[in-house]
Length: 178
Image (cartoon, rainbow, N blue to C red):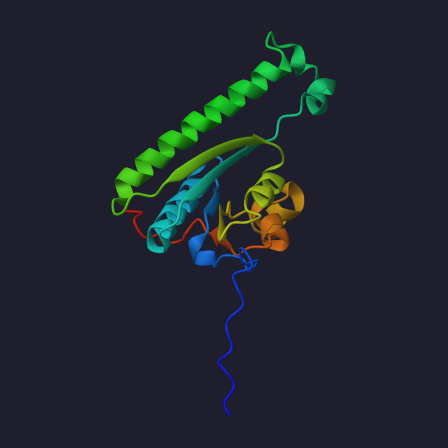
């Protein structure tokens, strides 16, 4: 006598398995520098290949209390207005750069979300990339001395990210960068 074939259990809801990296957003850090521009270009190209969106993140670290001892906080705008101006300027600049790079790159359209957030750049990038498929940052190329004296966003995210990280060096040959 043969046993009846086992019936699969009914679907018990969504899977808890994380989505494959190739299907998740690519987060790229940008600060308006030439190094960051190359990182954005890399992220856009990689997003085209993967068919995923990009989140371009510009972090700005402005804490008025940190600078008040220097006496320069006597500007007519209250600190909250300065922070708002920083955010608005960052959003406009990053948005313009994205459009320019999209035009240069051509190919399939990539959806891009632009985020400008106050905070230390590495902390902001790590938080924004917590569920990303990839985190892309540029390198200023300051070498060991620069990392020791100035700190380095790229070094910090490489050591603390829980997602794959690409550091685009200043001399990288990025596809689409003519």
